[in-house]
Length: 336
Image 1 (cartoon, rainbow, N blue to C red):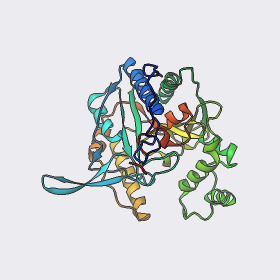
Image 2: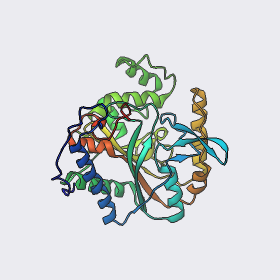
Image 3: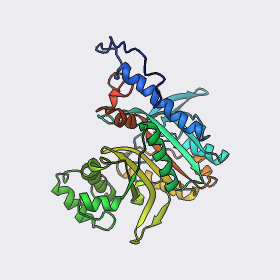
Image 4: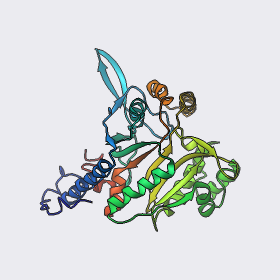
């Protein structure tokens, strides 16, 4: 990271006061340098920085990504809008229209996400690369990590199925639902009310038994996920004949940092996936989310591309050694 601010004095006398920010002044300086490094990285590659609305008339249909709604008045008529859970939908509309590489750094919002690694409002870096394969995007991600860490960062690749075999002892794509539930019960998760939600059980096993082991020796990319985990990614058949999503996730020190897709460019398929999400939401008693018709219309005009979303606060955590997300953001949700 840039050292242009490294000599700033650290007068943090108000740190213990109730009004004080969550992070220290010293960390604020590191964060400013970090953000400068990110923007310089994309400037050198002539990737366009864009800004999209934080609010939208459409919400995220994903069952596991809860949106925050807000009441607004438009021309004297009350409406419900949604704070975006990522800038993806609006950026893809720009991408379909302009057909150029672009990135955005912005706040995003997810309801009921508060923990040592989560805050309801956090900062996301998202970028799209027309003409890039997932492999090319992974190489660029490696370059970005090298810029941030100030030394070369190589990425190791690890398939979702192999990670499950190594750390859980079953194949997630071929094991029966009964076998998956049996393993979950064996590890103390049998009391969860997930019913026949196969992917829900796999997500529990992955987050508790696989994820903590990832990315400790070097940054790790998990690849070839089940299609159910990636509504906006293309699907292909692996060497064993199983359908897998063309996506990867980056883990460092057991923490999920980023996820990337070979982007789906099929409006009808996207509409069908959104409708399936809403059907699942209805079965769970969750509100039906308005579908982004503009995104569906734009999808057919998307260039062949790959895109990635990266948690800025989490990456700053692992780079600086911070233990909690509140240490790297201005005000955690409890002090906002």
